[in-house]
Length: 248
Image (cartoon, rainbow, N blue to C red; front, side, top):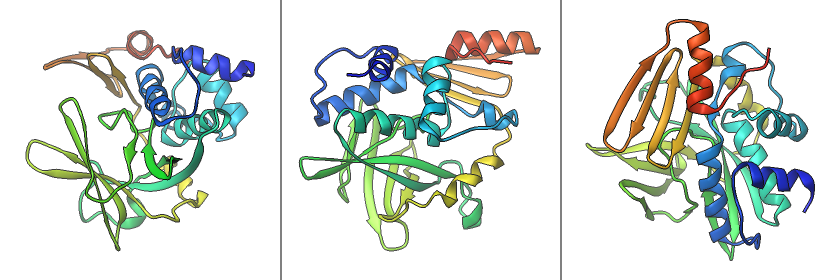
């Protein structure tokens, strides 16, 4: 094992066998989601971002930052390939909180990973940030996937391709959809449309989220909202809830 892989595994606090099985994939995915936040701060603050592995490694592993779905899943896919997994990166349309009449070209883009293990394909995704599966989901039409109180299902049709739904209190809601050939990098420039400063991370008891200067702490059935009043408070809350220290 090279030093970078060792550092990656140490950062997400993983110890155990590295045989590339679906069990290992689930352990790595969960550890990743509990350690590395989704955040779009470089985009929102008009800083440059790079999808090159050395740059992603420096940002996320060395500087202890997070990233958007492209950054997180690209780096995670690198780790998985280094450990012997068969990985395909896929681009998806992200439907959560998007109005039904939104033009196709304005639907946010997302990246996820497809892992082939034992002849079965699974979705593995560390780039949603908010509620989403923490374990690999078998890519089987009609399959339902439960994690605690959360329930997801896979469907497929000709228009949308593969679709991952999440169960809400009222009904099923489409989280994202993708086609088998959705792997073209032309989707990536849509990231520039993000304007709000966002951060999200899973915790063992819930999740932390941030939208600009509002921080929300979910623990079980309780919610605490904390609003920062100035840049100093915001930077302190960013470190406290997401362990992010922004470099000048």
